[in-house]
Length: 156
Image: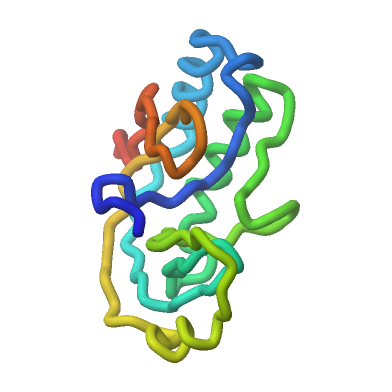
């Protein structure tokens, strides 16, 4: 299971720290902050269960709700680095989700689906920031460093 303090939603993977300088990271945060300054915090509901061969995830009930956050990340990446980042959902698509469990072995999916189902009790959350992190090592090592935060609606 994903440790509670590491629950998150990945918007965009922008590249390796070997290719991105600290100054570029700061500039990306500035661009994203400007993009999000007039976007109100976004209330979302999690509850739909999404199964993947390597994980169990909770999906958002509101399609497109977090599109402004993804767009801010994409704009910052394109403006500063001159390239597109990639979503964890695959090219050209983004399915905002929170991974709650990772698979550590090959196993049949039916017992998991039967036990958990397609929906869990809903949980609401307010998304009020986009955080730029550096991930050191493999994802499940949870060795992340926060570089900075672009808050939603800092100006009226």
